[in-house]
Image (cartoon, rainbow, N blue to C red; front, side, top):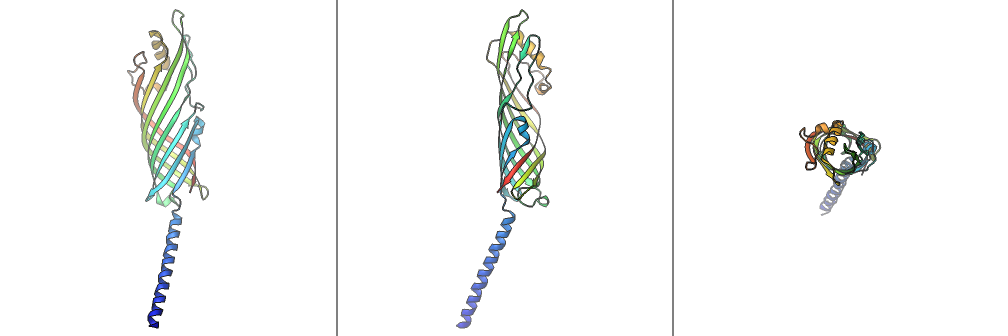
Length: 248
């Protein structure tokens, strides 16, 4: 009976010890994969007046999913200079709005020491909604003055691939280098006139717009007119950036 009791005590002790060792091993294993969340701020886009935050979450087997939301203010380096012609003058064009970008990434195991750093390949979708105003003045050939007041809207839907590297700086800080993100974008441009203008204005306006190379992407047969103020076209898009992230 004592022998059975001793064997029982030894068995229970071994069981508890093995359970403790297994739990410790599991804890150590999980500690290597403790980083499952990251919040980041994209610093490069601030130059253009964009303030964007992203949340990234580890999903499974080196795959992560993220969602970015950004707001574009009127400030920024990228803007359209105003038209300055003899009879047509406009102010500079500043645009503002928001953008949303969901993304899926795969991190290369041999370059990563946790779930959220190292080289990665990604697939992204980006939707941007921008609004702007165009104000100015126009004089007809006979010298009749008109005030210009237009509302402009631009919706952009982009889909593409992304290659990048996330550099760990400290235990919780990463720097994300989005190196190259080629893709294709669908553009929906709308131009709304808020005041009556003579028909000759649109001819002069279309002629003045030819100086902007960005309009080369618009359908070649598109011309601004009283009835035609909308254009849809596709063009090459490219995503890049630098972000600073905090992991937890």
